Image (tube, rainbow, N blue to C red; front, side):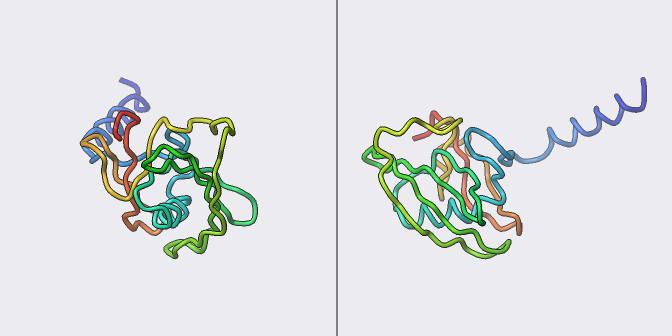
Length: 138
């Protein structure tokens, strides 16, 4: 067996033994570890909500789409700080009939797991930030 295939087998067997952690870019969440502080800040400002997408913006900001318990979609903009520091919410407004962002709603980021299939999310500093839940979890 070629060395490259043996290395791949080792990597796959190690990956299979590790606990489930959310992967970068899953379901509308680009750069998840870097964006985690913005997700947390926006969710703390909107109790009971779930983040359905998050994208980086210019000037160290992040755009977070939220869904409130009553189904209303909102858009939160948060200013990101250095790794390990909390983000600051700059604005929160209704989305209205705006089209969904790429991947919006495929997964839901929350501060607590919604079901058994949720994957833990850590920020860049390695601090527990929240949970990435499959779309079926509500």
